[in-house]
Amino acid sequence: MSMGKAVPPGGTIGILGGGQLGRMLALAAARLGLKTRVYCDNPDSPAFQVCEAHTVGKFEDLAAVTAFAAHCDAVTFEFENVPAATVAHIAQTKAVYPGAHALEMTQDRFDEKSFVQSLGLTTPRFGAVDSGAEARRLFAEYNSRAVLKTRRFGYDGKGQAKPKSADEAAAAFASFKGVPCIMEAFIDFDFEASVIAARGRDGSFAAYDPPENHHENHILARSVVPGRLTREQGAAAKEIARRIATALDYVGVFAVELFVLKDGSLLVNEIAPRVHNSGHWTLEACAVSQFEQHIRAVAGWPLGDPARHADAVMENIIGADALAWERYAARPGALHLYGKAEARAGRKMGHFTEVSPLTRD
Ligand code: AMP
Image (tube, rainbow, N blue to C red; front, side, top):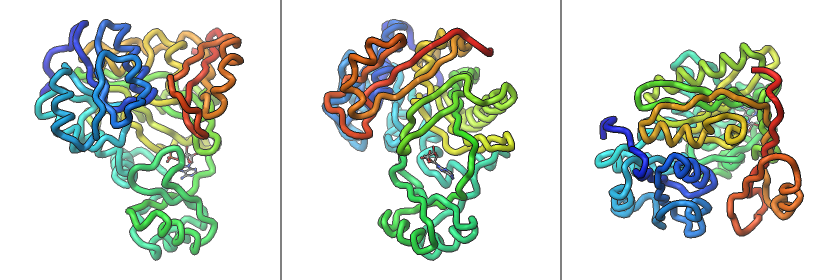
């Protein structure tokens, strides 16, 4: 479907995926007078609690997805493993943003990194691995310091291995049951950062200040803005995002995860075609959060101002941390709990954001 008219207040945005990102998108839409419907395969989806209507169904069930989309004025998604074919199918009858092309490009680590390099941007060195022999060869080529990743469906460290020898590299490939992989040179980065940005239906672009990110057990633990990025690195990160968004003809919010090297350069690690955990601080520190920004883009509204009016530290509340909710509630700052019943290990249960007066614009 082509661009068409903006979805006016009272209209309905459909969201594929019902996790905490969908939940916060639905809350942001409500603030703008827009309704949301959520489609997810999990009957206990956190987003179901805060939307007007929901559908439980498989993402591959094109008939069910089409029936869902018929009730919506525009459709989006909150996680990148929605099949690109499903998004392409919806696009035959409904405006869906971001489009299937952007989704497909970011679902495969090899395609994504090749695309990023084609724009003249830098990624870690990488190569395709389809056999144990290739795993051994690239491991040696990268001086025995490398990360093996499945090309598709990896997240929070799943589908990743850090072999210590060529034998371990071949064994890691076998442990992924022969699915296509990539080997990446291991990067001794100084720290990690990300840039969250948005592109509107009209091609307008807005980027938030890039946070510094800290991971524990492969899961984001904390985002700090401003982090250690210099003003120049912040500007360079936003320019990277702009080039990616333009080349993909992207509509909506997305994140680019970056490695910041000791020499100051920025490497692109990964593109997430959706709102991102490292952007949750925008709820308190910006007039228009990443969630509202995404809804604005999808609905064809003008993008909001991404300017930051405060410094912020966002901490994830993971697994059993959530049992200490009373302690978080007593702390000065903003507590967000996602309405998940079971505090399983490694599960993102909520987050907490502390804001303080702006120290640097
Ligand atoms: P990813 O799923 O690709 O975002 O990787 C998850 C995390 O693993 C990253 O945030 C890094 O902390 C680490 N990591 C991934 N790739 C590399 C690499 N090539 N070199 C060093 N660390 C990496």
